[in-house]
Figure 1 (cartoon, one colour):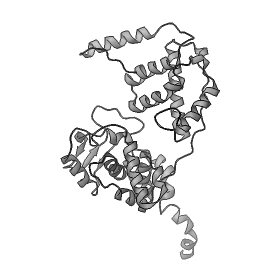
Figure 2: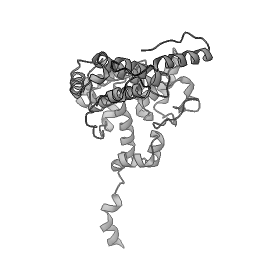
Figure 3: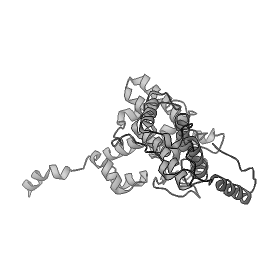
Figure 4: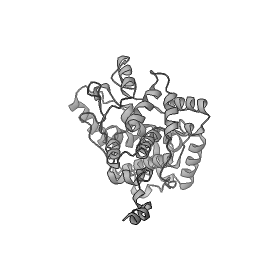
Length: 324
């Protein structure tokens, strides 16, 4: 739930927000609903807080609210949580079914954060914060497209004006995260210098670092055409979630090849594919870390085993010793 302060100046807006927060700091009540806790958390911590991906949190709350909203916080049981998980997987709750335990963990962690937020604000007695069991954490993802599949997916990007096609081209050329591309503006793209600055001025860096990257040779003409046909400041034309558009292109790739792996592709798959194919091509771990914005240790942990030179000297030590 979003509320307008009704003010046109910053000072008035800040005063209105302070008044709103003070009004919410009412004495703790045992009958507080989960819907109220979720709304407070969304308004106070997400909308007016330091959360970067606000759209994702809004979507998560929209999935949680229909099931938990009317429940008193203290009455939520582990059985309720397990039922929610089942309904989310079956598509009975939410805009679309939850694909993985990772999605369910994120959503339930938001519920936990909302309840704890209410307890810290003394709107909910600490003793009434229920136990929320979480599904097991998913294992490390190692799903990526091989060289041929990557080319087949690019071949399915037939329409230049298609948001999904342009997203795929940018993702496979820069390995940027989904939200970085969805919110990318033309002011961040220097076609003359052939450079993309993923972290715009004024945005603080987070653990998921956004970096500046050169524009790849094969990406440049597609960006030039998109820039010539632009209708607004956003490179993709809109910052709406790209999932449906991406799925449509992946469906075309599946129809053309019969390869069902294309139906499993997510935005993160494209980032993982770039890094894996770069490692397989012999790109150094240091350069891969620079493009991903990750630490060298993280990149070595996830991609070193894909490098063709990894452990080569070890398996050839007998020949080396014989020559000596």
